[in-house]
Image 1 (cartoon, rainbow, N blue to C red):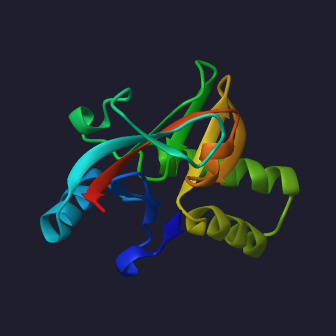
Image 2 (image 1 turned 135 degrees about the horizontal axis):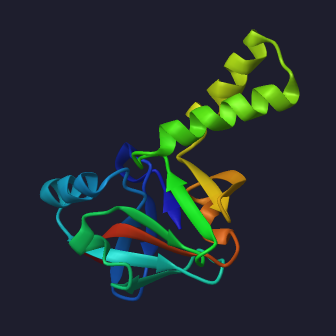
Length: 156
């Protein structure tokens, strides 16, 4: 894997006869990449807690026009920073953390700053309770989750 392709934060994977780019911040970003640089949309899966991409269509990302999805069993829910409910969850987490820590207002501000500025944050819910906050990249290694991302495939 190689990152920061063309001054964007994309991951680059070389397979036998193709190069796959992932890490797009939205489905439309992947479409724009194709318009500007060529290639074709593909769905990429990362399974078994590793960073080895597999071309698939299991999650239906292309049909659903999604850029990211995680399947880790019925007890888990992964909320990506681009999901509509993310801000609400993040705000609630900040309130809970501030109450538990019994911090002053300036410390609560910095706690809020941490979640809002974490790299592509993902909130992990297990059985309707907060499990953790992680990054999109680290979600590939959690609990043997199947992580699906939209990608762009180009010939080598």
